[in-house]
Image (cartoon, rainbow, N blue to C red):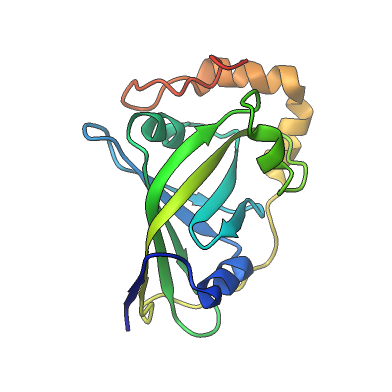
Length: 182
């Protein structure tokens, strides 16, 4: 059954490496709660207490706005194959944009990804597992290439224009600062 840890045990790090999908949850004291599914080989465990994930351009930018106001983040993984497990990482995160000093070092952990807009650097302070016996089996088929194809077609200038139109404010009107750092 469920366990708690103050950092990621090696067994859980190996589990994370096998996952194709994870979910990110964030909120501020007065915002809507945002839960986003993520994929695209976009998460890396750098240490038992540090996880980074590369965020690509999407229709909204809630996570960025939330983290800049209130750094709380939860990342959840579910075993859709094999032994059942739900794994949650709790901690504080910060947002890095392409023009921030640490960007080049952290983005080097990922394959080149057109449309990359932020890296979230999370300090993990609680790891929690639960049984996952109610999670159904699902088969992974392949990654969707639609977002990557869209970003390539837009080019850097088109993606930047999209950020200007669609990614500067959260649903609750909170700033993402995505263009402040260009």
